[in-house]
Length: 408
Image 1 (spheres, rainbow, N blue to C red):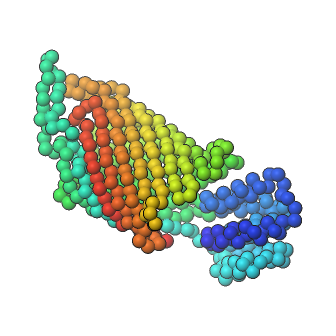
Image 2: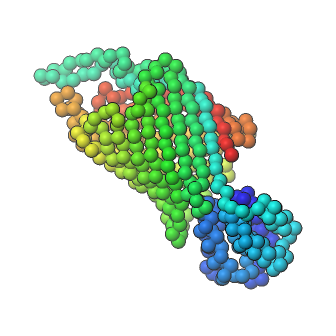
Image 3: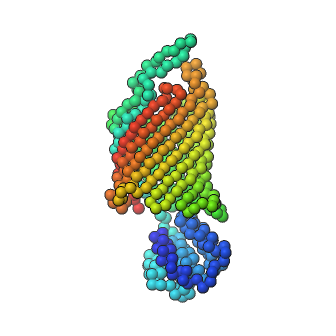
């Protein structure tokens, strides 16, 4: 039914406006645009209500009649859809393409609402130069009695190289006719030899869109569980909100404000649980095969116990650009900087510094479609984790080739 609505909008681009005998009221274009925006965001109930207001204000708006009829059909309201189809056929003398669209909708039937679902699958193979995030320097120097003592690090704390296989899957499905979706995400990685660093994560959640006048809001509630080395390691509860204010920006630009809180619990570690608050602004650009975005966020990580270094605050910067290169080949470049500053010395008496961390990630990806719903992706990534405590300072390089499949 979603395809039918899209086809209807295209078919009506000329025919509908030819049927309008008078100019709409001043507020009418905004109301109609709001309805189409609700439809694009999956909020069918909101779109239907807005279109009915359009019809009340302008009974000869053929486009509104057809779109609300198709929405009512997709929601399983067969009687209301049949009534609206009959009005379109008798009042507007629609062209043959619209009549065929109505006939197809009747033949398909409007017995009940059909939830839309989507799935994806990723299988990859990669090489990781520093699986364990081993320290860049082979020793750690501490100050003792006015002098310095150099402590050599054990092999497990130095960079270790390995190859790995990764598997990821995601499933999403509408749970209400007004755009609320439920989702489940899984990602696992198995190293060839360093099995103690194998990882797996499972996340599930619900996402709902809302609209308040010109403001848009999308909320997400998510629960996650992470395993490391075959054992449960971390549990997370995350609440997020994405707000789209009605700024006077060109159509190619979009600004969103995002806020969230994350509760993190470590199942096998004490004094590391925390609550992290985030406020982020994002500006994105989309036009002619080019997508780019930039965001900056401010974070406040509150330790719930005597965590080493105590609470901390940070700033996160994300840059992303994606565009067509040659033929069907698409390229993507990304840069992320995550900075943290703790409020207390990390481990008084042993490590007296206040931990300052700045992690830089540079990423490049090539995407080549091999079928309509399949693609190959080659990704190279470099990580530079700079810290004032050399024990935690590390670098890494990663190369991964993966096969992506988009399901129905």
